[in-house]
Length: 64
Image 1: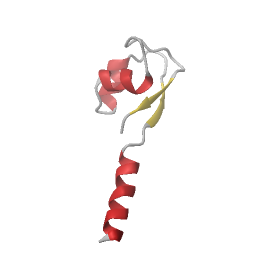
Image 2 (image 1 turned 135 degrees about the horizontal axis):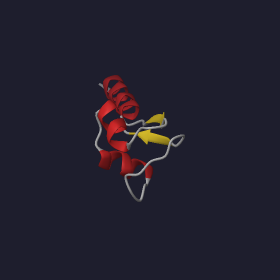
Image 3 (image 1 turned 180 degrees about the horizontal axis):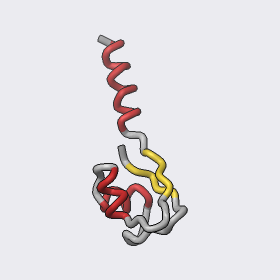
Image 4 (image 1 turned 60 degrees about the vertical axis):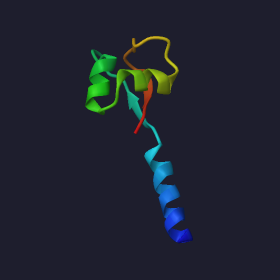
């Protein structure tokens, strides 16, 4: 039982990791959110942004 619990805990830790994404010229936050099936709000919160505006070259942490 402990082995199953240990495996489950490791799986949860991996599921919670963020994906690093570099914004390319011409993209907006809605495009990135749609591509990775997350909400704009999730991206804003995950990155501590004050608004939903992003710039090319910025690296975003996308929730997994």
